[in-house]
Amino acid sequence: MAKFKPISELINNYQTGYSLEQEFYKNPDLYEVEMQNIFMKHWILAGHTSQIPNKGDYLLFEFDKESVIVIRTEDGSVKAHMNVCTHRGSHICLEKQGTVKALTCPYHAWTFNLDGELKAARNMHEDFDFSDNGLHKANVELVGGLIFVSLSENPPSLDGMRKDLADVFDVFGFDHMKVAKHQTYHIKSNWKLSVENYQECYHCAPSHKDFAKVHAMAMTPEKFNKQKEDFIAKSDGYVRTKASPFYFDLAKEGEECYQYDRNPLLPGRKTGSKGAEPVAPLLGKLKKYEEAASEFMVGPVTYFLIYDDHMLGYRFLPDTQETSICDLFWFVRDDAVEGKDYDLDDLTWLWHVTILDDEEIIVNNQKGVDSRYYRPGKLSEWEHFPQNFLNFYLNAISED
Ligand code: FES
Ligand code: FE
Picture (spheres, helix red, strand yellow):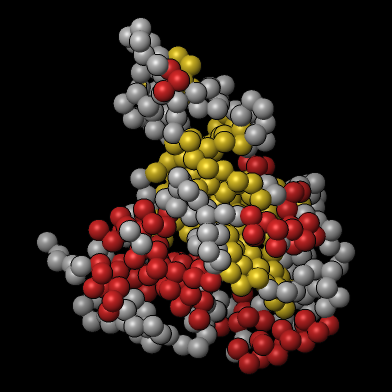
């Protein structure tokens, strides 16, 4: 049986500017702390309203041992209930997505309405209180059509982000998007290696030859910064270029972490696609291609990349301590018609090949981290976002 250092010792030993030591990826007690202090607390993208357009439509949002039913109720609102029957605990919805008239448990047929209230339970004692046995509720907030769920009793506020980014949501038409495709990728690595990888573009040039043909970010920081300065100077401000850098440890007190930034693509590149040419109609109120893309992040594990004609959503979740899930969502404007306005293969090509590249490098990373020879390594100047993530992470697991 492996012996692990106390978590407090692990945290105290961490040296800023370095990667984490091996036990951070291995200690099962620490994994439990991560679930409680990060995944059961923060806002995470659960899906999009376009995936559950009609009453009774639901999807499951799942990580680790948790399963949440995200459902369109009778009055058209979106609610979230834990997929745990209040009788003896069975999962109620067994399919990942579907349509129901009511939520009937497959075990002994207790039946809950779409609001999660218990409506039928066979042969119970006369004094049995139905009102006390509704499904456990989860918090839901909509950002445009994006559905965020938090399992906390007291979730961090999204109000500051909503106010700050109202112009961004308006110009990109967050109220008028739909999911064109959702795909799940299973990665044989601890979830932190997946998140750490997403936070840096030090690996982009060597690992993502297709991405590097479109994104200026794959160049050296000097070249990229120069191009970004030129881009901001030339911008007419129609799409916001001002950054909101409240990511990870830079979140304001009581508020969820979030980020917005706008970055140039390489000259002449319009969007993230095979030939960098448009693959869907312009989003929202955009009038032209700016050869740029915006970054948007909400909470610690949900990120978006907003091209002018489509948006990509990224969500990283733990499946077990050794395995993680990356969900990719491709969004287009809600009146775009598949086959006419966009072709799914063209739309999804770049980020499908990019996540396959990422999967390979993350899994190789995990193999080396598992070695008896692994030691924390020095981060480069390009890896400041992973450092912010690590700062956030260490603060989170230090909380009682
Ligand atoms: Fe659901 Fe018994 S466990 S009805
Ligand atoms: Fe990558």
